[in-house]
Length: 221
Image 1 (cartoon, rainbow, N blue to C red):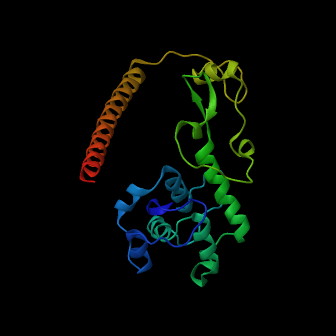
Image 2: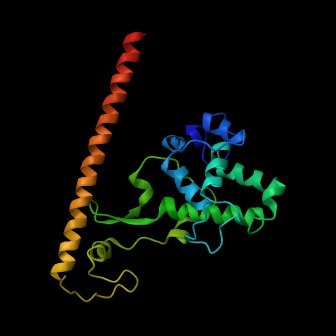
Image 3: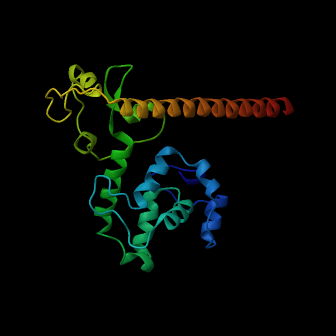
């Protein structure tokens, strides 16, 4: 949940520094994002007005700043939405009845949390949810009906390689890249590899710092 407290789906207003700042009418510091899980950030993107999956999810007058402030006030998005439907400020701005809006939000969140990807190590399609630890349960939703079913393994690798059309499974016409296209791709891949190395380095620094802090705390006991 927000500020690292509570489940994503429900809960009371958050008694964190960010939540207290929001409750006083101020805007929480962006550093509050450091305590958010990827799942909560995806919910934030949905509330900011993404049109991913559903045709109308945007709340009139609720932008990035407002959504961030409100999410810092509540441990769960469902509780936040419940409060908005009771608040005269927001009641007339909601795009549809509460239960329908909650269902729209949950369906879009499902598309973010559970969309299908190709796992090159396993050579098959999987849900993105298996790649990261986290609570992505969405009770009552039929995930395959939202995100689609997996392609059989015998097709998945060929689709990933661009040999088959993902929709028709027909063979795709193969054309060589031009020198300019190849050069562009090589530059992108090089930058991605550099970014990944920097990410791994920074991650190792954080893990080392956490280990040293834990060792100091244990030695002080």
